[in-house]
Length: 506
Image (tube, rainbow, N blue to C red; front, side, top):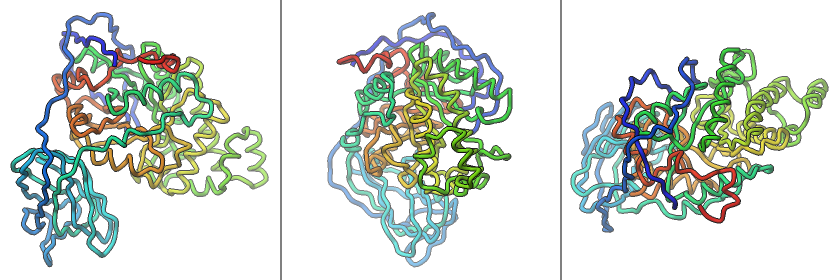
């Protein structure tokens, strides 16, 4: 793969002034929105090779009784320990060989529970326990443990749980089959740029990861701070379309500014990404769960046919009582957002588009009903592609397999992390690659801490990109380490996406 020399500006970092990311609905922050001119790069900074880790291949299994560990907010009973939300269990395992392991819980939960796994105080994964009265087994795989004494900590994040024991057995890094994915775009009108982007993503998937940063709407504040620190820009600039439906002229002006910045970013060689947290199509204009009745809005199964009708045709159906006023409002909002995305299409800006994200979080009105969510996502896809002919969109679905609308409506599967951990989350990576009927490339669309490239390489868990929400958790040296890793690609290392499909090689 072609590599360019990596450089760094020796500038003093100014104070970070409340740099907020965009996983939540952003508030307006007035700041200079112009990107730094990167023509003033000064000194050479060498690429960093991935760290070498000791790695063996030994058979191993051990079992630790929960009642033998130290715990709080828990009660020992009948050989197991009962934990309420917030309960913690800590124990130690003596590991003979540095390698990957599978951590298995014998657990039950009457309510259903989420239990966080920490190794030596770093979050490495989550056990999701379904409700039931019998003990069963839940596992986090591909966990690297160094030889010697390791602390194993469990934290009950939600629900209650009875934990009988922890078992640790030898395993392996994530399987290379994770990277045998579909590469063609599902967009029926995919532009040459979209085809090129998908080809490029496929070429690097399993080898490299793209740097990404989510910005405050209408600004380049976060990515400019990254440049001031590292002398490099992220490959992907991520932003938010929520302001399109805010019914606030100032916010809509901010979004127009943001679209202009996205166009500039694309012309400078970067990749553009937009999430759409949807302010509900009613008087509340809210994203909160329960604030819009999606089941009432989409009460017909024939969404595909409705998605390509004109506004007048849909209005006529409403007057005949065949669709609801809520459905008409959905269409009106989708068309409004499409107006902004069309501005990018006309400028040949390939756009990663993540509508109604984090479907499985339980935070938003679009996740109140699973079946209706799938219809809504399909409606957005069909309306954007088949009615508005938005040929520049690459669709990103973020959520679990339960809410998945289907392979025909998704190009890439995204995940959000807020664990304060630089783990590669290899167990989650591999589980996700197996959870969906048709394999898609996997990306981290929002995170408080980027998975460390050394760990992605060690665990064979190469997320396609890792989108950082804010810089507050990073030192200058940590950012430089990320942006000069040979594994992480930055804007100056990208090919011309719009012509990549015409190239035999890069």
